[in-house]
Length: 256
Ligand code: XBP
Ligand code: MG
Image (cartoon, rainbow, N blue to C red; front, side, top):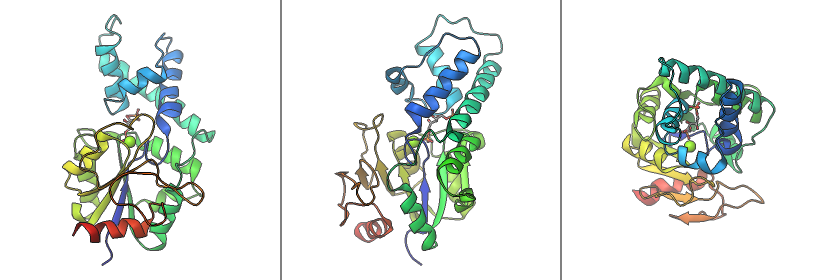
């Protein structure tokens, strides 16, 4: 059987640059709607990204950056409500087509489909946000391209914990050696590696460049496509400066 059997994609930062102009903006809209004077700037949001998960990130913000805030008695309920509002704003932003897929994502997905390589998603964000992004950027029915969508609170611990990758592999009845993970962050890389996935390809973005990607099989600035070649930051170079299925398959041969 052809290797890899599956490609498991992270969402935020990997499929699309959703953090700065998607999640961050949605958080700020939710705060304003709830009458809070909190504003997460581009810089502050970069620091907040050290914690994955929106609800977890709000709590981290209060603990570290807004200690003077008078907390309601039901803090967890308050945060959950804020986060629901944030999800609503995020979905509205996506339906306006606010964020495109990163270069090379669509072509790699289509190539995988054409060759019956299985596709899945392993993300920290909510399932609604995943569908909102996929539906606004890919043809109708594209959610069905993904055999498993492992998202959000379906597992107890978010990345860098390996839970979401373990969940996806289990659902697909795959061993970790049979899959490649595609990630954009050190937390995502750790999650995949700790689930036993030896082949993790990283495409960095403004928030994650400069992180430690030791343990990744290759690191690029993007997957790349015709007219927008990928720049190699670490690992073996692709022949045509594009991270396509042929390149990913060759990674398995090189490593064995
Ligand atoms: C991305 C995240 C998420 C999003 C917010 O993780 O860290 O927390 O920023 O999503 P990944 P929610 O790259 O693994 O998808 O607010 O829906 O939790
Ligand atoms: Mg990510």
